[in-house]
Image (cartoon, rainbow, N blue to C red; front, side, top):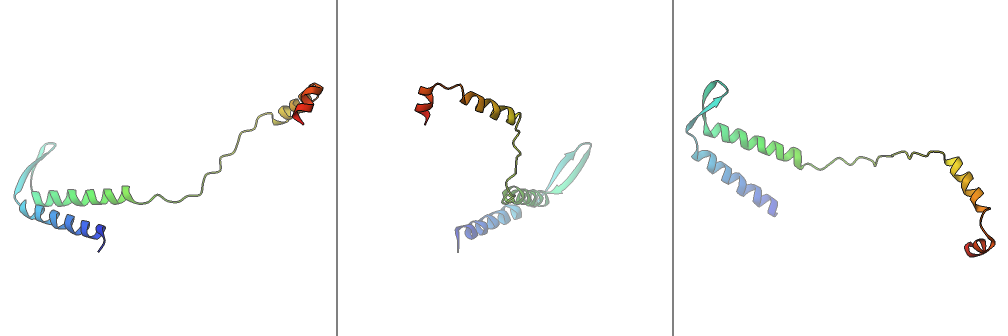
Length: 99
């Protein structure tokens, strides 16, 4: 048996023992109303709600394809034209160094 299986069994047994020891009724005040509810029902419902929330938050994320974010290109033609014009302004020494 794996660790996960043993852990689930132990937690289930502990929750069952705790729930069975708390069967008396308790007074709950909800807004203006007073309700007598069994501790067993309240604890069981909160345990179930916690389990559902844990399942929802613990599930693996969906594997979506990576988003394609378009690049913004502004005045690309002007920049390339300026680059080619600047190429002719280099001195002979700079051209020799680059090549």
